[in-house]
Length: 293
Ligand code: GDP
Ligand code: K
Ligand code: MG
Image 1 (cartoon, rainbow, N blue to C red):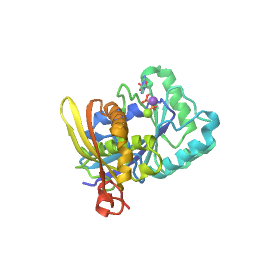
Image 2: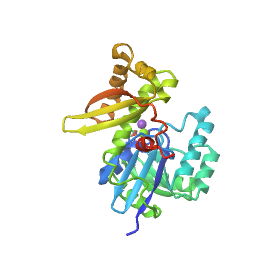
Image 3: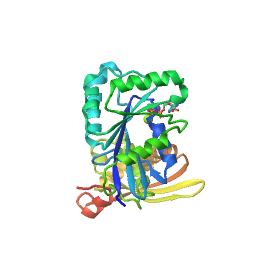
Image 4: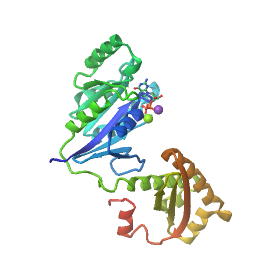
């Protein structure tokens, strides 16, 4: 049995239904983990695993900005999306018209990467309009494969997913398949805490910090997590903790709020700070924190 794996980047205007599609894919599958962990290549939002495939979905929110900002920001994004992908999903919603951005469309037209154009929200459309739209997009992007779908109503979603698997290149999995159930969750916890530290402390401190979620235990009512914030010096430990623990408490409260939203569950988050003078240079520790280099 040949194993297939690859990166599927979802691009499109805000609110066309990209996140809804991700959730719909999840509903079809055996396992998926969402994470906002930054990796060297991708911001992974969802990995869907099967016995003989691994689909790594990446969604890029809020990319396409109002007209005056469009050119530069979109082209930056488009550049990465095109470099990274094995398959591109270009999502539009019914009634939407092509952007008058030739560079972007030329890229979409000329790329060697397979492009699936998903015409979403067809549940909210009449048949006649749908036919007109399919024709319109066929003219706009003759090289793309057009699939009318409803991400919300789960219409044609499975068919699109099967098509993705067909198009995936033969490859070993990029991420360990047996570890996905807990590791990315912990990564997400790490990243959420790190984000708060970046927000609340001055520049030098956050970069001396590494987070390790040592415990992640989920039961029916609550998820209990314990994370260590590792710093390099005693002085940094003092700063992180703050006067009578107030600074650390703030990190904990704000991180917990985000995590409860993310996991949609009550969270108990215990944080403590540890001085580890060599965390940066110790290769094994770096590996454990997810660095490859
Ligand atoms: P994103 O910004 O591209 O990620 O879009 P979202 O997934 O957040 O969806 C934006 C809005 O469109 C939400 O209110 C969704 O419920 C709605 N939506 C998404 N897919 C569909 C669909 O297939 N049909 C309809 N009627 N609404 C949809
Ligand atoms: K949205
Ligand atoms: Mg979204």
